[in-house]
Length: 195
Image 1 (cartoon, helix red, strand yellow):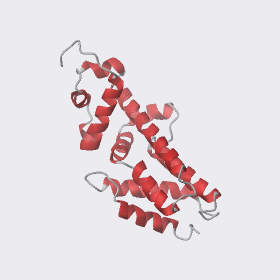
Image 2 (cartoon, one colour):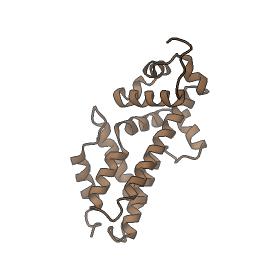
Image 3 (tube, rainbow, N blue to C red):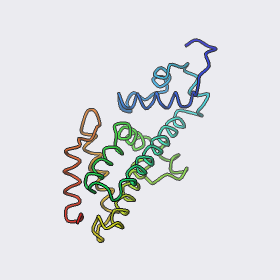
């Protein structure tokens, strides 16, 4: 990489490169060398902006948590619209996109990253916990709107749905949850709860 070339936003350039790598190759190829090569920057650039590689990975996970929260806000905007079942199915596919699924595996596999994230105030299982919370919030809003039975246990439904769809996604090479299987899962989970 030639020197003297100004980088527009090196942190974002590196994080975007990592997301491309994760989407394409999963977490197995996520190394500092691969990230800098994908970003098209010199090897030392990553360590100029991040204390160590785990600090970089924490930033990557925090970026995905922000994406999950944005998806949660988008899901909330559909309260009272369409069908609860379809909203949940589409929301699950959006929440558990291939990058999120692979990044969740990273959080599970790397104790240091998980510990740092918890110290920053994330959920007990960072990323997956945030996805579960936004889904539970949506279900609670639909319950309050009368579109989900009053006795629906949203705090049990949300992790069950997130976990099931996560497993559906990890079983596939492209880590994309199949929408037909997601719909069947949601329909069976909400059977008797949608008036």
